[in-house]
Length: 422
Ligand code: UD1
Image (cartoon, rainbow, N blue to C red):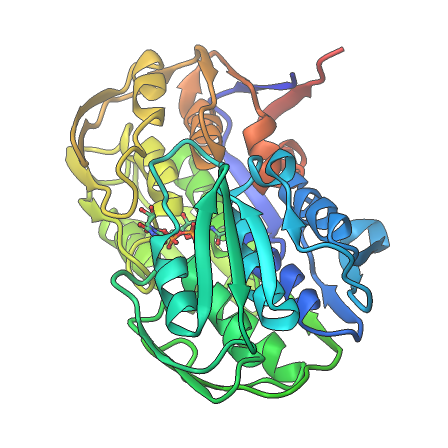
C-alpha cells in the first residue's frame, strides 16, 4: 500500500487549484438513473470514490465514460438492467446508498446493501427509510440489504427529517423529482452540494424550490431529460489547503475558492489570527505574525463548521498558541487522528465528543497511520509543521478524497513524496 513522506519545516508559497467537489459528484452521478437521456458532468474530481460510484452505476447497466483524464464524465442510463447495489461495491463507500432514491423512483424497486465507508460511527439509514416510506415505499432489511418496492410508484409527501442528513436530503430530492405530486422536505440539509444537485436536477427538468434553505419543495414530473452540469468547488479540499500555509507558514492562493463555501471555517481562521482574502481567482491565506491562536470549534451541519474539516483544524491547533476545545457533534467516533497526532508530539485529551488541544511549539515527525479520509490528510498537514520526517501509511483513504495531494502541496514548496508500494 502506498505511503506519503513529508519532511516538515518549509514555508509555502504559490497557488493550488481546487477540484470539483467529491461529495457533490457522488450525488450528481446517480442522478443519471432518473433519466434515459445523457448527463454530462464537468469539473469532476479524479478520485477513487468517483471510480467506485462509476463501477456501481455500471453494475446497474448505466454507461459511464471518462473524458479529459476524468475531468468530464458522460453518464447514460437508457437501459438500467439491474436494481441490485451489491455489497462488494457498496461496502467501499457509504455514498453508494444514493442509488436508492433514483432506482426506486424510476424502476419502482431497489435492493441496496447497507453501506460501509469510513469507520467514523454507526451511520445508520433510518432517516432515508422513514422518508421514502412516507412517500409510499415498502422497505425491509433482509440479509444485509434494504429491499425497497413501491406499488404504483412514489407519491409526494411532507417529510420532516429528525436530523438534517445530507445523504437523506439527496435521496429524497432525487426520488421526489419523479414522484406523483408535491414533496416538502422539512429540516432539509443546506450544504452547497445539495444546492448543486438541485441545480442539476432542475437542468434535467425537475421542479425544485428552496434548496439551500431547510424547506425544499419538489413538484414531481413524469420524466427527466439530459443535462450538462459543472460540479461545484470542493469546499473541504479548499479548507484543507487553506490550512497548509497556516500550519507551515507562508501564503497560498486557492484557485476557485469562494468565501461563502467556507464562511464558518474562515471565521475561525480569522479568530486564530490568520489572514483570509477573496481575490479575483480564489482565496488567499497567509499566516500573519508567528503562531496562530487557539480557537474553540463545534462541528455542525452547514452553514456551521464542517465535520469534514475537524481533523485538519485539529492538526493546525496542535501548534497554535493556547488551548482549544473541539466538539464533534455530527459523528460519534471521529477523533481517531488524535492518538496519531499525539505520536507526533501533540498534546490532546479526548473525552467523549470533546477534544482539548494544548498547543505545543513544534511537532516531531513520526510514522503514523491514516484511519479515515480526513484523518489521513490531517496527518500530512501536521507533517508540514513537524521537525524531520513524517511517514503516513495506508494512504488509500486519502486517494478516496484528494487528487494528487503530493503534487498540489509540492508545487507550493512542501517537501512531500509518495512511495508507491511494489
Ligand atoms: C455526508 C458527506 C460526509 C460528511 C457528512 C456530514 C457525502 C458523500 N458524504 O455524509 O463527507 O461527513 O455528510 O456532513 O456527501 N444519520 C442517521 N440516520 C440516517 C442518516 C444519517 O442517524 O439515516 C446520522 C449519521 O450517522 C451521522 C449524521 O447523521 O452521524 C450525519 O450523516 P449524513 O448527514 O447523512 O452524512 P452522509 O450523507 O452520510
